Image (tube, rainbow, N blue to C red; front, side, top):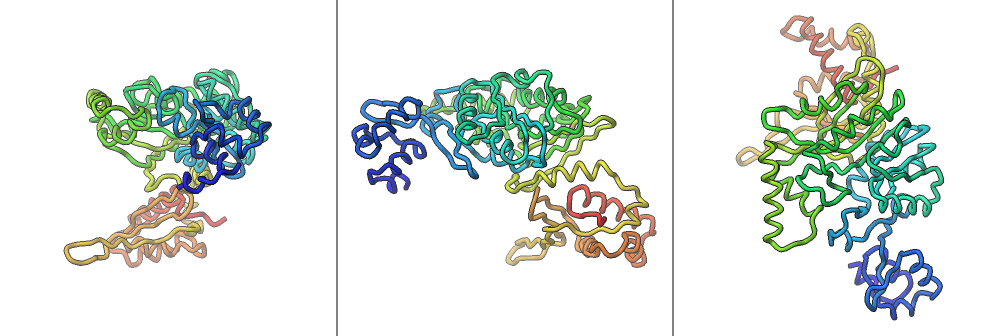
Length: 445
């Protein structure tokens, strides 16, 4: 469609073909519409290159918020010939920015910056000074160019592996969208790494605390395997042992190994003959079988440096982070920093958080729709978590309107319950703590 819409020869259409679509334009055609001095400037800066009788754009520009971000073209990425290709803004970029805690901070590290968009957004909106690092000098060059193009003078760009370029320094925030694919190969730096299974992400988490200030946060996307005979939570818990950090891990979905290979393999390999594609696919699946991989999980984690007794919490999300969630993640830490005693809860007032809905589940059974005996509380903002309830418990939760102390609500329920009051109170306290922790309920100050 874009090719059709840009069929007329004029400057805007030619620029769109070069830097958005990635379509070469005959040199003679370009000279009819673009002034010579502009063509010379584009060639001198390396943004245009001669390809036979055509002029081709060497980068793609993508608008994002108020910024313009240069990355590699679709054609280069599809060819799969460059290990150090620089990926365009994609869904994982948006996920990381939606998850980021955007309260003002003095210093931020964007680890594995790629094109630099996360660093640029952070430096513009809430971080006083941003350091962006990447393993490849080519990605660093893109990040420097984009920082210059968008006039973000508070971004420095360094080249090196993991935390090596910033050894000895500490940051208030670290954001990372690392090459987290779980693969037997390491062809594409932006997606793959040379470690076994999830070893790269584990290594990153192990090293990060040394670069965090007290109270500083690491937030990163990651994928990890579940090995036969071992719960995935147990595998990940080891990442945080002795870290001096609290951690919240959100699991947002999972793949069986065959489906994972089918989804990830096209990203890291160039188009090939069917025989070669089949060999690569078999290589990946055989690798997962050899490593006894049962499932591969996708998610994200937040790590906070804190002195004292640390904790780790695991959470499953019903959806990918498509809405700003940094505030909700920060609140998870705030709630756990100030755990309420039984007496404080019983004497406190609570209300259902803004944006929480109650959803009835209707299931198809046989020849008709039937209302399920379960209902769900659903968040329409932040992490968009779901919480299953029975209708009776939902009726009790509906009383959380911030007007009555919790003890009174428990007393009212206990009068009608066929079990001892102590049991009713214990279950109500456990329910409220869970709803507070997950952000469905707020304490009335």
